[in-house]
Length: 234
Image 1 (spheres, rainbow, N blue to C red):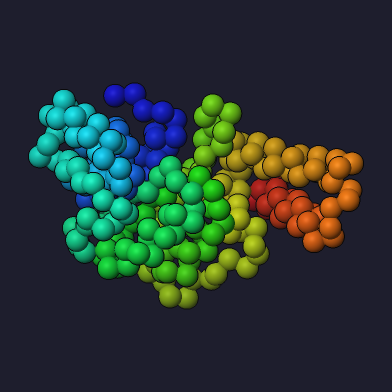
Image 2 (tube, rainbow, N blue to C red):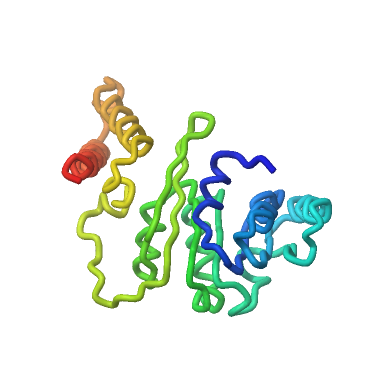
């Protein structure tokens, strides 16, 4: 089975032996791949919409994996029982919706050790949520597919209570894992973001913008510069 670069990135973060719920499973390809590769022992593939679930059911049947993969239609974690899985994979949706799903599924989340998250937006808010709810980011990945950058996070339930909270806002907005490893794709992403914001400031039409808007753009540029500086120091 051939997965897209984004899906390959996501499944590469799943720990071997996981009992995993694939929230927003769409066609079910990631769930099928995880079982076929011997990474996941059991998968619950869930989606809020009937169409994707019907496609996932058919794909699972064709793969002969009905015993290892169960497809359920439901919103977020509502069709999961606490303790039924030890890993949640939530991908392909905005950060605010992802945070809502995690917040609504507190009973399930309390029994989960690992989160695989691939937010399409507001990734800084997702990182804040993880820290505030007892999870530490242990790995991040980035990929470029069809001209768009995608990030994926693997977070584990925090063991050390004295773990230091990130001090700077850029550490939440852009993370530190990829910066510390001088990831070339991540550096390309940062440079592209910086160039975009600089062009906005230089645009004559933006000259009449209010001071708060201009200060926000300048702040974002400074955060990117801080992240790039951290990469050089690392």
